[in-house]
Length: 363
Image (tube, rainbow, N blue to C red; front, side):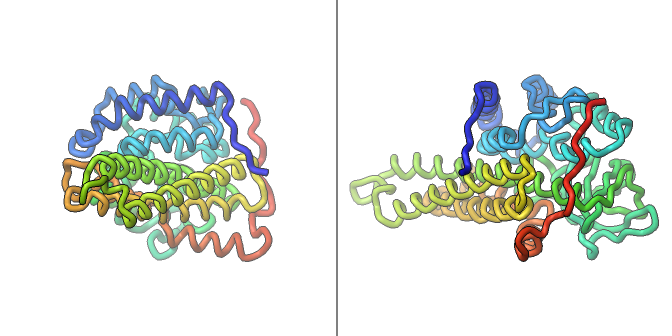
């Protein structure tokens, strides 16, 4: 039976994230969208202990469990998904840091600690996008959520490769959503990877964790859209009663709530199963991501509709959440890649890698 209960320390972490989201991120979300994130915000985020939630303890990180990180990211994305993406750096590389040689891992961690504003992003490079040569990579990534990424992690089928930013050619692009994180087109021209791995197990589990992270953020945005739509429709009157008390809007709000709870539980379950390395956890992670994408796209769109013409104005944040949800659903391969993985890993009883990653050993 699936159970999810927080220890007092974990509850404190989530409460701290909720306070940071409500008092710092949400009030400034329009400012971050227009101007980007200031350096002091990265410092404040690090001081709260959130900058290294997935960094192994042997490198000085906190290494918080994946289920707790899911709750933290949901709270942060509730306030501002673009800022949450920008603040996340080392957390994208959790399983990778575990498997890298100590000298390589320390190089990446030291760079992030010295320059907290440096971005680490992930991208899915299929055979049609990134060509793998002898010790070099060539390809074009139309969009990554960072103006000038310092590190880029790419998945190419069963291979993971990490590149330094100075080996990439980046051109700034204006994306429809996630503007606080920035955006760039990345071109690899015979770029050499700083680190790479052909371990299919590591690749699968790394991407599953990334999908769960994105799913948590999508759930947070959907929840924000629902809460705002409820506040609006319960205070606006049509034909003598609140909009929310009319049948069609009431049904829409109820469906939004139902989808959010389903996506949230799927994400929590996927996080628990992946952390415990249970059979089927890879397919569960991909399914939870798909569920969260559909939930966020529906809820943010319907929130705009429930506000009527006002929903498309920048006076209300629902239009931003709709744009952010659409952009977030395209990252790291998007729905198509996740659906393909569900078909692969769910076709047989458990079509997962035959071995588990070796347990981490203290240095």
